[in-house]
Length: 354
Image (cartoon, rainbow, N blue to C red; front, side, top):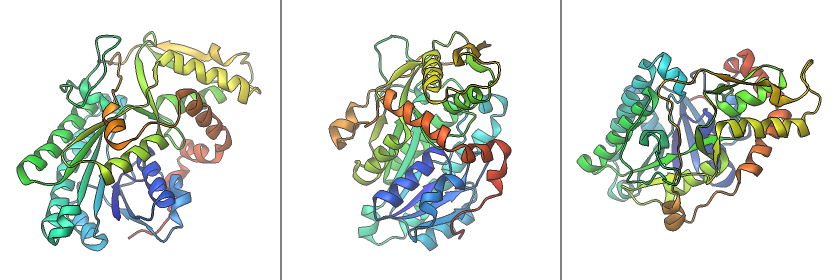
C-alpha cells in the first residue's frame, strides 16, 4: 500500500500520517504546501521512518502533482488538504475557493491522469478518498435529528460552501469518468497537535495565560466532538475497506454545547493545572461572551451507524476521556505550542523533502 496524504502536516492529516506510519506497513507520501496551519513538528514521530516521504507541493500545481504521482506511484490518495477555519473564510473567502475547489479539481485530474495509465489490476485497486465535513449539511432544526449520508446539502459559510463544492466534484468524477472515489464527512475534531486558533486549544492556552475565553453568542451551539486519533483510524478503514462510490459519516457520539466544552476545560485545568496565572482565582471566571459569528450554525450531530455497520468502526474515546487526554497533552507539550504561537514552527523542516 502506497498512500498519498494531502495536507499531511495539518491537524487531521498529521494524525493520519502518524497512524499509517506507526500502525500499518504503508509507504506514505505527505503532500503539503505548508501554509500557516501546516506544522512538520507534528510529524516528528513519523519523520524518521524510511516509509515516510515529504513533498512540499501546492495541490493547485498540476505539474508538481504529476511529478508526485509519477515518482511515488500511489495505490491510494487520501485528500485532506483544505482551508478549514470558518472565521478566516468569512474574512477572506478567496483562499477557500482556491484551495478547496480549484485544488480539489486539480488533484482529481492529476490522480485521474495517473490512474488512467495504470495496468488493469492496479486501476481496479486504486482509491481516491476525499475527506470532508459535516458542515456541508448546514444545521439541524430538531433536537433529535441527525445528519445522514443522504441529508441534503445546505452550507452556511464560505468554508462549508467550498467543501460542499469539492464534494460534488468528487462525486461527479466518479459518475462521469468512473474514477474510484470514496467520501467521508466528519464532525468536529479535537486532540493533540490542534492549531491554537480552533476552539479547544484556544481555550486551553488562553486559560493558561489568564486571557479571556471567548464564547460566541450564548454558547448554546451544539457540536458532535470526535477525537482526532479515532478519526484517523476511521479514515484508514474507509480508504482501505470502503466501497467505491459510498459516503460514510464519521462522528464521535459526543454532542456538547460550546459553553459546556469551555466549562469542562476550565474544570480539568482546575485539577491538572492548579497554579493559575496571577489574578485568576477560578478558570471559569475568564469565560467571556462575544458577538456571535455571522451565519453561525446552531447544531451539528452525525449518525455514524453506517460506518459502524459496514466497516465495524466505533470511536474508542468518549468526550470525557478524550478531552482529559487533550488537556494533559497541551500541558505536557508546551514547547510544541510555544513554537506555534511564536511562529518558530514555520522555520523547521523535518523529514525528507522530495
